[in-house]
Image (cartoon, rainbow, N blue to C red; front, side, top):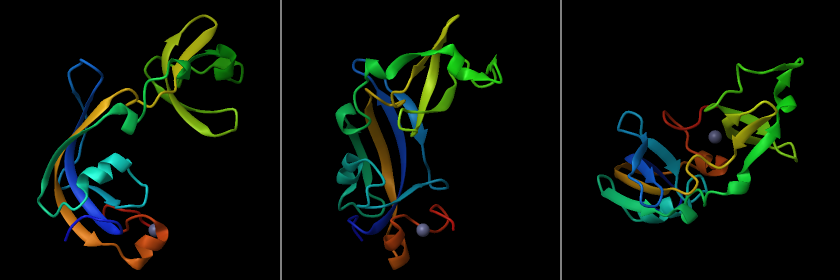
Length: 170
Ligand SMILES: [Zn+2]
């Protein structure tokens, strides 16, 4: 069976990433016990990732790169912002449990949509936060193997996601 639209695909891979002229660092590793399982052709994963796996079969290996512009985009300096420290007060006290350098916290944008960012700096009056995707500006490198390919069930197609041990549970 070959990978194409409406099929459920299981893969194991090592994902590394790097920015220009920098060495790769390990981002994520999936394996046979904890595979990455997805419904092909339903916009659940990066389009370029699907394109690279098209027509592959069980046990086929893969080794490919996805440039930043086809992955999580370029790093935007304007998403690295200074916010008033008052925003982070809980009952009039600065929330040190949550707001410390290196911590990822969820905020809301101007439209009330949740937006995750990492705290990069705390000064007397401001908190600097970076709302870029952690992989923004990075080229992705996937090395792995196809573990399983099967036709999706009608229910999975209707829901637009995979059911079963590594999929959704209802
Ligand atoms: Zn479902």
